[in-house]
Length: 116
Length: 115
Image (cartoon, rainbow over all chains, first blue to last red; front, side, top):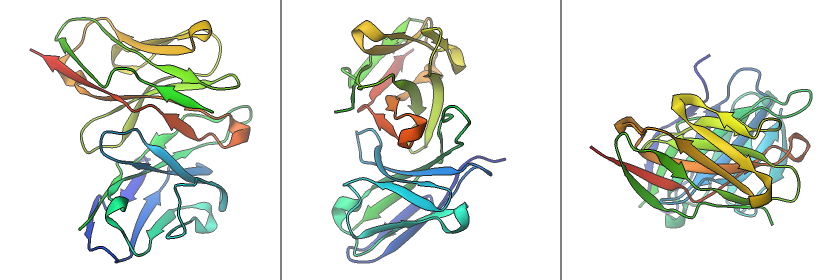
């Protein structure tokens, strides 16, 4: 297993364009998380899935953002009509829901989005 | 409200010196606590975690952390810092498994190591 994989690693887009990021979690991890990290800050929770169900969305996830996890495997995060304020590192993480507690989350290397 | 505070934004230590990074949390229930490290432009790597039991936990790369419930703290320590330890360090508190397991991060502490 090569860990959590995110694609692309870097994305530069013009304001107003749509972008989509992909995350491939560790095999058989049933939980998948998206976080956003701006410069000089810690990651902030955006949303998470348990299998294919999106169970929680942060207030940070405006209606321009949509995330999916079809079939409970990979996930996509789409941002429509990008704004300069969307420039950030988008991190994906996955974890396994154990019998008694969740295990730690493993993070991908992130997608760096720059909106110009 | 759940929160994590890392009081030190930037710390510089000499190579070979000891290190302590501070972390305070606010959480209503028994916390799950984590320390992650992030190199520039990279994702986060888990250093260590505390779920329950022994309050002194050992992690990778020679790091350890001590959970002190009375002080709501989970400070990270290393007896002798190496130049390769220069990075950003994040403390996080995790929601329980039945609350989704999401993480709340502090702002991070940037560690610089002097030769």
